Length: 207
Image (cartoon, rainbow, N blue to C red):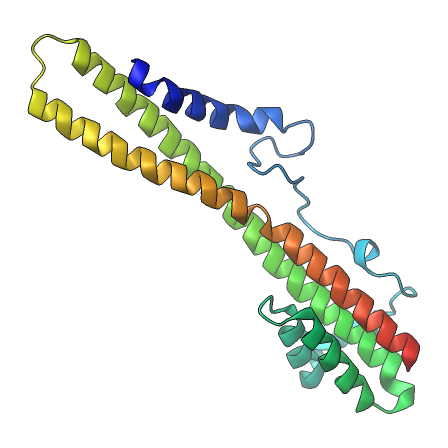
C-alpha cells in the first residue's frame, strides 16, 4: 500500500477540492480556485454612459458585427485591436460615432459572454470526467493492493494491472495540470473584454 500513498493522497485532495472552495463558489462542484461567475454584467466592464437600446442592434450592421468578431479573438493583440477600433471610428460621420461604438461594444460583450459561457460549461464537464477518473484510479489501486496481499496472485496479471494503473495515473496527473491552465481562461477573457471596453470608451471620448 505504501507505494500508492502519494497517489491516494492526491486523489483525496482532488475529491475534497469542491468542498474546500464551496465558500468562495456558489457551485460546490466548480473545480477552479478562481470564483465561478457564470455571466459578466455590463456594469463590470463598461465605464461609459448607460447604453441605449440601439446598442443591442449591433448584429444588424455587418461591419460592426465583423469588427466585433475580430476584436474578440484572443490571437488578436490588444494593440492591434486598438488600431482597428480607431481606424473604424475614423470612417464614421461624427454624428454616428457614439452610436456605432456603443454597438461595437455590445457586439464584443455579447460574443465574449457566449464564448466564456461555453468555456465554463467545458470546465464543468472536464471536472466531472476528472472525478470519474479519480474514482477509477482509486478502485484500481485498491485492487492491486489486494492482489499483492494474496499468496496465489498471478504475477504476470499483477504486472499488467500495475502497468495499466501507472498509465492511467499519468493521464490523470496531466489532466490535473491542464485543468490549472484551463481555469485561467475565463479570467483572461474577462481581462480582454475590459481592455477592449476601455479602448472603445477612450476612442468615443476622442471623437
